[in-house]
Structures are given as C-alpha cells and as structure tokens.
Length: 463
Ligand code: NAD
Image 1 (cartoon, rainbow, N blue to C red):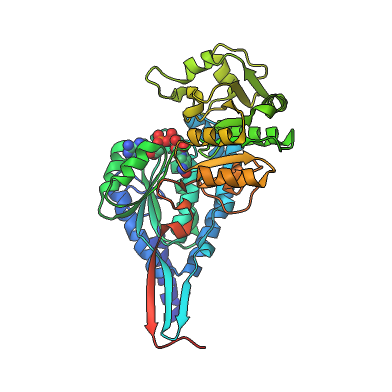
Image 2: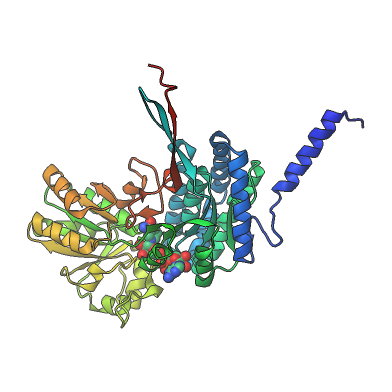
C-alpha cells in the first residue's frame, strides 16, 4: 500500500497521540498508582496537557463522555459501596450516583464577567488552580468522586483523590471508569489519580506536596480542620446535624412522607438529611400518628438505643452508622415490627444526646416546642453552628423567613425532603461537597477556579 507524505504524517501523528494517551506512569492503572509521588506527578502532567491543548469548548465533550460512561456503572457502584462499607441502601445509592452524574454542572457554569465604559474594557475569567487534592468520605464515596471530578476537570484542574480507606474499592473503581472515558474521548490520561492503598499518611503526604495548589476536604470535623491547617488554599465541607421544624400550618400526611423520605434516604448517610424533628407541641401527636403510617417504628424507651448508639466515651458507635433501622433495633434488643422498616422514632427532650450528635443512622428523635420561637431556638441548638443544612415545613411566610434568618445554614429546604436541596426534586444543580465552614456553599466548577482580571484601557468599548 502506498501513502503520500501527508497521509504518512497523519498516520504517524495518530499513532503518537494514541501512545501518548495510554495510561502513563510505570504502575499506572487508569489513574491508580502505587505511590503518591507518581499519582501527583502524573496528575501534574495531565493538568498541563489539559490546559495547553483543551479549550473550554473542548473540555465539555470529555465531561459528556464521562457522564455517558458512568451511566453503565451506576448499579455496580451502588452494590460495591454497600458491600464494601456495610452502610446504606443500594437502591438509594443508585439515585445518589445518578444525581451526581446528571446534575453536576460542567463547563456551562463558568462565565466571563465584563465591565465596559469610557475607560475601555475589563474582563474577569475563571482560571484553573492546577492540581487539587480531594479527600472524600465513606458515606458518598463514588458520588463525591464523580461530582468533584466533573466540577474540577470542567474548571481545567486535575485531581489527586484521597478516598476513605474503608471505601477505596468503589472509589478507585469510579476513578478508573472516569479516566477510561476521558482517554477514549481523546483527553489526557491521569486527569484524576489516586494511590491503590489510601491511608491517613498518604493524605498527609499529598496535602504537603508543593505541586498541590488546593485542598478540598469532604468529611467530618477532623479532616476539615486538617485541611484548614495545611497553609494552603482549602475548602472545607464538614459535618452537619440538620433539624427539621414542623409548625401547625402544614398539610398532613404529606409532611410525614417528606420527612421520612429525606431522613431514611440511604439510611440517613447524607450530611444534609433530617437528623432531628422539632414539632410544635400542638401538632406533635398528629405528626407521630402520620409518621407511623410511613414504615416508622416509635420506641417509647430510648435507653436501650442510646446504649448501643453511643459509646462509653460519648462518641457515636461507628458499627451502626448507615445500618438498617431493623438491624439497629435488633442490636438494642428491641423487636422490629417490620424488617423493611425505614426509620425509628424516639420522643425525647432537646438535651438528649441522640438529638445533639450527628448519628448518620435512621434513628430520628422528635422534640416538642411550646411555640415557634422555642422551636427556632431548638433548631439552632441542634444545628450547632455547622452552617450546614436545615429544613422547615410551614405555610406561614413569617415563620419560613424567621427561621431562615436565625439558622443561617448553607442549605435551607422548605416543605420538601432534604434532598430537594441537592437538586433531587428541587431546583438547582447537585453537589456532594457542601462547603459550609469555608463558605463556598454548594460547590461546582466555579468554586475550583481563580478569578483573573484583564484590562484594556481606551479600547473595545463600542458605545
Ligand atoms: P471522615 O471524616 O471519617 O473521613 C472523610 C475523609 O477524610 C476520609 O477520606 C478520611 O480518610 C479522611 N480523614 C479523616 N480524618 C483525617 C485527618 N485527620 N487528616 C486527613 N484526612 C482525614 O468522614 P466519613 O465518615 O467518611 O463521612 C461522614 C462525615 O462527613 C459526616 O460527618 C458527614 O456529615 C460529613 N460529610 C460532609 C459532606 C459535606 O459536603 N459537607 C459530605 C459528605 C460527608
């Protein structure tokens, strides 16, 4: 077969490009490396390539390819996460993964600002940081990897993921699927990386590396504190303890159905889920009656539950986090009325430890308030200054507004299950990194950019 010079050159270029796109690094397996050094240096290379060869328009097809590919893995990731972590409910994990895939914004959320006038034109563009260290939780493992990968790559960064050691298999599975989709779509290899055996030491090593430009910590107070003490630009998405207030203007039984759907979602693993109900005393009994119609069991004496949920040192028993309601009852020596029970309800005082601690279990305390002012005080006490999430059910505009002002949370959901605040059955995009402590809010590609201003004096203003 004869080729002319131009055809030959095209073939050589194609082969070279393909070779270049093979997962690189001696031990690399679609972004997964044996050492943190390799994970960081390959992510650095990939980011340089992304920034120099892919315009914003050329990044979007990579994101589209990632979404398309991930749809083939949703059920698998849900099963893997449940098996590996022993937490949550598979069918709910399917919904959470789909939400991350479909409703995390891509490059469309990045916009250029312009100021024009007699002095000319100024534009503000959103530039990448470079390589981001993203630390992800066990409670939404693949969801956080997917959500952060889409947002951070859309913003032209690369990412070194540090998954929770207890959720490494499913997190690394998502990382490999994402890298494969990017490579198949003609993008750089290793835009997201990780080590095969993540530990606290590998996270520390990653956070300290000079090539890491930003740290994004999604998890409990400890990891947020560690990220904020790193001396680098850090975004902290920490723990919450969302209250849900119910006043006397609500529709029954809708309110009970909304609360159970939010609180029981993935066995209450979401940091945004309803963790304690504050009901006005005048409607509390009616609310309990309606909740009991929603596959909920009321436990009159909370002591046995308290004993198994709270350890001697006052911390939450990790072995029960994200477990089924019937399983938790069994551990407490209480017979479950139904093995498919969605939620356990206890009727207690505001100072009960199961009210004030973030449990991440489908065991939800209800506290009674004599009036709306007291209900707000209780809501604020339960939320404990996390600035995370709160819910309210009311048709009284004054009440809806007053609690919003008092509670000051990043997410405030009115008359719907908590997940409406994540874009599931509510307006707005989705995120699994809710940055309350550092104030970025519901993160998206914009969050992971640097603002750069470019000014031309005496030109380009056309009016
Ligand atoms: P976790 O805090 O135990 O772990 C989160 C991640 O941080 C893991 O990768 C872990 O290895 C790492 N880590 C923990 N301590 C660290 C330290 N001192 N230094 C460096 N890395 C450290 O959390 P989890 O149990 O996996 O997740 C549940 C917690 O995360 C809950 O408190 C929940 O509210 C919170 N959370 C918050 C958000 C949010 O967007 N705000 C999202 C999901 C989970």
